[in-house]
Image (cartoon, rainbow, N blue to C red; front, side, top):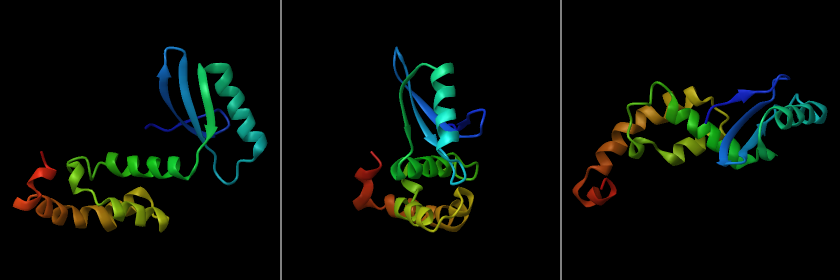
Length: 127
């Protein structure tokens, strides 16, 4: 997921959802009111093939946060099973930046998770 911005600085992501266009999710910050959001919606409708357009919910915000952790340059070498999903959720609730989460929870725990997942009784997790 790559974040883009409208001309009035409202963050958004998009994904192709068919030959007719894309689905857009807006991530306005707390300082952007209805007028700015409506202007951003109008800009996208005028410049893109919009099939759906909505404001991010809590699940969307968490998925964006999670993606930032997975894409961080410090975690790119890790395998999926070396990420501690409950720790990601905890960091999100603590309002840590994605980099802070990586440094505080992900990197310190990745070695332990790797060792745990390579135990003989957990071998089926990796195949």
